[in-house]
Image 1 (cartoon, rainbow, N blue to C red):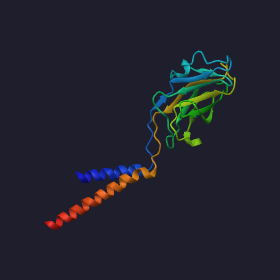
Image 2: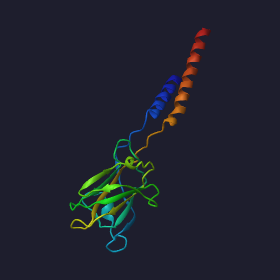
Image 3: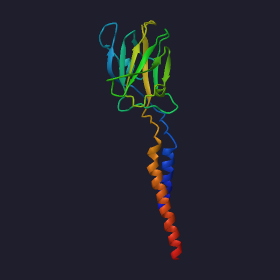
Image 4: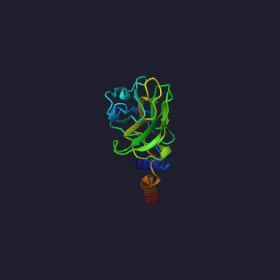
Length: 197
């Protein structure tokens, strides 16, 4: 029984030391509107529901200078090793683009991530900019007035739900040291037990 426990500790420590954990495959939609601005009216958008309804066929047009900041409800998106982390959907075919910014402090400050392109889902990787904090807000800023509904036609913002970051090497060392010490203790106990018989 004790030997199985020690073996389990060694396996766990080698898993942690071996590198990173794998991100969950499920995605989560940004469903919270934190802030918006319509450059055509110099005020917040009156209806932002199409940007947060999870439907890739409905959209909110973001003409030049307009923006929307969306949040993830109760989750953060981290950099998943070797995978794209954020997905920005645009449904127009007028060559509309937008700049994408990420925040780990609910939209108080932002870091530029990349440009999202029209008529596609743009896949973005946080590793491209070395962003290691958990993303809880994404800001999309329209860059043009193309298309019949002028501007970037934002349909959806998705992220890998609760992706995990790599576990640093030192985090597994106490487990490994404890497991090896336990194995040494078991081996010594067994060898001293055989001598008494």
